[in-house]
Image (cartoon, rainbow, N blue to C red; front, side):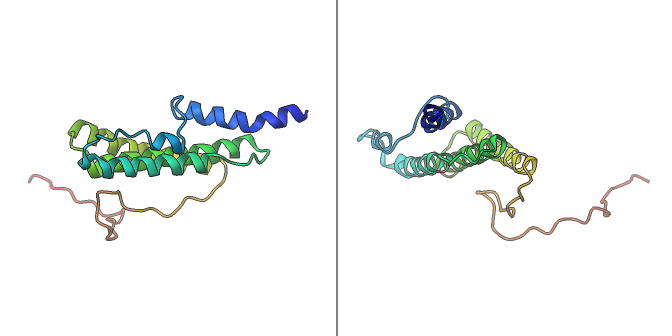
Length: 152
């Protein structure tokens, strides 16, 4: 039985590897950035490295004994990492097709985080504006008001 508990951190590491497409991110990997990377790419690489470091640190959970909660505890930082990386692309990328995909990633990953949290009875965090939107609050139209134009 002690052997099984000794393997638990290895299992979590393997789960993290599978969740990140089989690529383990380590601080040493962050230093693998080519020295000849253009200076214009440096802010993107720094933002991406920070997102990966945070994601990997936050995915290393202490097992709670509840498989469902542990799954959510690992998957939320994984999804947040995808959101953060997509945000970096929106800030620094230029390819419109990839920018649209990054926007979709942000929306779908936020929806999946919400669904997972709700599934295990966790409260949802307060909503925040999209990374490329102003931070001013948006006043929603009341649901009972409909603006329709009718032809006479």
